[in-house]
Image (tube, rainbow, N blue to C red; front, side):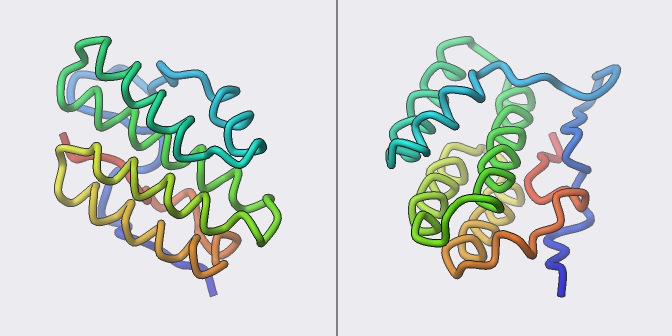
Length: 134
């Protein structure tokens, strides 16, 4: 069974008001991959969030980046060894804590629980698991 988490949120393309299309990551996805592969998912996520905050993004732009970051983590968790599920879940919780959008934070926290329970493969990334409404 596929988890369709908060399908009413925007899709993972992370559109936000005024955007002409999908947003690109303003963080280094490779650093996230390397950090997670080295067993330091949380550290890599916190470094990325700090770097994003230093860019002076609007709340909407920051939350959009957090959606991309959450999706990056979920996608990686889907193919990662089962033993790393807790690391990915904790990293997703850090992303949720950084969001200023309560609905987005709840969605990411819900995804973190699913990942921590070993259900990353059941998460449908096309339903907008973490996009921000603004």
